[in-house]
Length: 230
Image (cartoon, rainbow, N blue to C red):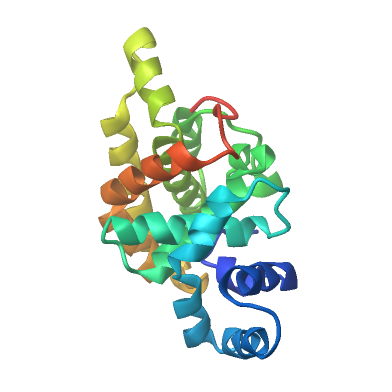
């Protein structure tokens, strides 16, 4: 079972670091020194917080050679910091959620091939009723992630649908996201997947995280309309 975790930073590519070097340095020894610093995790974290990288990603009009994980980590980290959310693990986790859900099929499959495709949160919650303890963990985590994804990246869609069709509004998604992430973070399997602290922490800051993603959505070119309904 593939479970989303805070793995964006460990999956950066040579092209990602080349982009950082291009933005922050000139050719020659200065660039060589930066590459050495990028080899150290603490130094790398500080370097990636440089707002110049964020601005370069926003302003770059050429086809970007960076990885999706790098792109979303830089974006999420900056908007979270502006919202007072300083935990890198939480930013990393949310970036991983956005990376995974940029593939529509991943969004619609809460447990890989072990469950059928599900397009609605209500279907996922109904599936929990007869699910095993293990499957309830996967479903709960997925519901929390989906609630954050839609409320963070597509807030206008949620509000518009709520007005026109009496569908659930933003408070519903916030409540669903908080409660299901909290439940998943407290599950015994969260410890096995090393998710307990980060998922619980995200549940506690779900609303400010959602609002920070709303700001990010205004800047993104990757998403225009939601890939389905929830």
